[in-house]
Image (cartoon, rainbow, N blue to C red):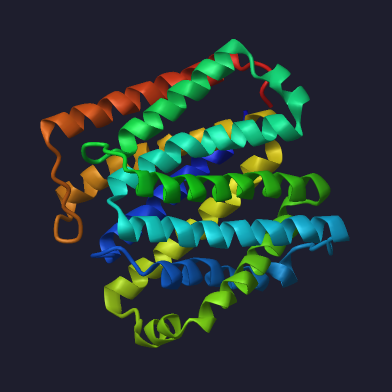
Length: 305
């Protein structure tokens, strides 16, 4: 069960990072600019090199890591593009519903023998986690459009490939070496956004000051830790359960929901969340569904290690 604990810790830090973004961002950021920032800041992972044992990758590992960097950076751009064009209540639930399914199908194609590990209890837990994640991430009436579906599906596919490519990397190298390699290559790939004059202009304008700058730094630290824990979970988990690791994303929204309520009560100056009775009931129902899914996963997944 180590991978389950690690995955949940990862989603806790993702929730903290999302909370920081929620406090800072008054509007959806520009897709290329934010994708550049999120990806390029990973360059600081190189600061860990003097303190860890880094194994230089072989050619195969290097190729998978480079492919992972491409799909990750491009996935971020498509996601932020979708959020810029469409309401978050359309994009995030669609992403949450389709990404675990894509991961499951891709893993099934590549490693068909792993399906034997997906017994009835695990499948039920997977569905409940998936359903709970979609339910808790839907903020308004969940209305789909053809255009929003296209971008959301594309982002989900790219992030699904990110999970798969990470697993390929970690099958050939250790967590530390693989993580540093992929984050470094992600920062390098993000430099392509600097060819855009608008991005260069926006970078010169953006300056974090005072409390906003501190919150931004803390959010990025939380995001970095979240990525480390998620990668660690991908290392530990059998390939059959990669989709479950992703379906656990609903736990992130549970954490975010709880933290938002607490901050709305104690520091409404920075974050104020107004919930109608219907939305509150929806989110509480989602929390129960996710909790049941976790219970089944822990209770009946005796062979999970």
